[in-house]
Image 1 (tube, rainbow, N blue to C red):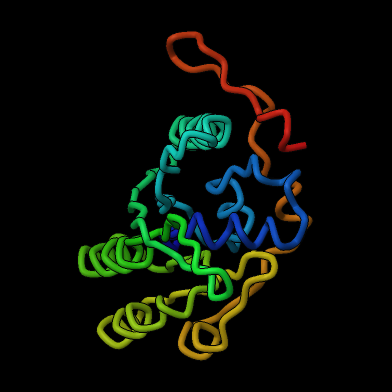
Image 2: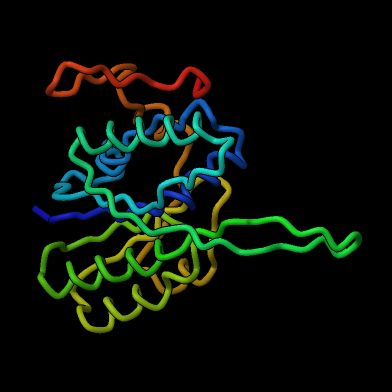
Amino acid sequence: MQRVIAYVDGFNLYFGLKQSAFKRYYWLDVALLARHLLKPDQQLVATHYFTARIRDNGHNAADQKRQNTYLEALTLRGVQCQFGHYLEKTRTCRKCGNTWPSYEEKMTDVNIATQLLHDAFDDAFDVALVISGDSDLTTPIRRVLQRFPHKRVIAIFPPSRYSNELKRYATGYLTIGEDKLRASQLPEQITKPDGFELRRPATWS
C-alpha cells in the first residue's frame, strides 16, 4: 500500500474557487478531497493545509469569523494547519498619488516546501499530492524527485489554476473537477468536543 500525503496551498485553492465562481464549494473537506484522488493501492496518511489568518482591518470581522470556523472544522477532520502571515505594504495611485495599506500573504510556499522536503527525508510518504498551481513550488518538487527518484510528486491544479512549470517537473498532474469538489464537502454542521456546533457559513451556499 502506497503512503500518500497531501499538501494544500489554501490561498491558491481559495482564489481558484473564487475565480471559477465556486463559492458553494468553499466548505471543502480537503482531506476527503485528497482521498477522492487516491488510487486503489494508496492510503492517505496526512493532510497539511497552508494559509495565513486574515488580519483585522476594522471592517472584516465577518471574514475572520468564517475563516476561523472553517479552520476549526478542518482541524476536527484531522487536517494539520500551518500558518504564514500577512506583510503590510503601502500602495500608491499612479493618477492621484493617494496611498492606502495593502496586505500580501507570505510564507505559504516556503512552509509547503519545508514540510514536503522534511517528509521526504523522513520517508513519510511514497506519493505526495501538491494541491496548488503556484510555480514557486517547482524547485522543491524538483529537489525531492532528484534526491528520492523512487518517490512521486503529483501536481493537483485547483480550478482556474495551472502551471506549465509544475506540469513539466512533477511526476504527473491533474485538475480538480467540479464533481470532486461536490463530493468533498464538509458536513453542514460539525460538533466540537465541548458540544459547540460549527456550521457552514450562510454565504457559502
